[in-house]
Picture 1 (cartoon, helix red, strand yellow):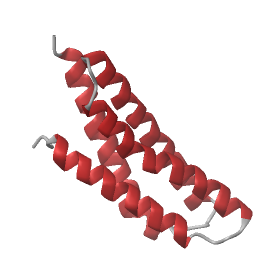
Picture 2 (tube, rainbow, N blue to C red; picture 1 turned 90 degrees about the horizontal axis):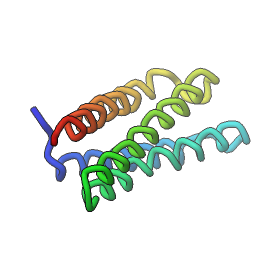
Picture 3 (tube, one colour; picture 1 turned 180 degrees about the vertical axis):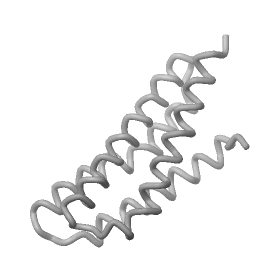
Picture 4 (cartoon, rainbow, N blue to C red; picture 1 turned 90 degrees about the vertical axis):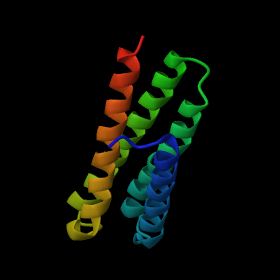
Amino acid sequence: MDKTPQELKERTKLFARRIIRLYVSLPKDTVAQVLGKQMLRSGTSVGANYREANRGRSKSEFVSKMGDSLRELEETEYWIELLTDERIVRPAKMELLLDETRQLNAIFTTIIKKARATP
């Protein structure tokens, strides 16, 4: 079932809130904070770019901003993986967030492909 723009607007906002809560819970050591800030920046940008995409004045502007959202999701996944690989956060704690990141990635990829295919 396709998600409506409003549903994705809410879902990306909840995603950002989860990222914020994770960042706040990270240890205060340098590595955790550096990786966490990168994740915080990219993870909270997803929804902002998604909202901008929906205000796009043209299909090309929409696709471009959706592409920005997709890139931020991919970057967020990278930082989550590093936090896990470096044992800063237990893998079990990251499973659901990583799954949501990948689901949003798949949804946004589909939206971009459909938008490009539409005349």
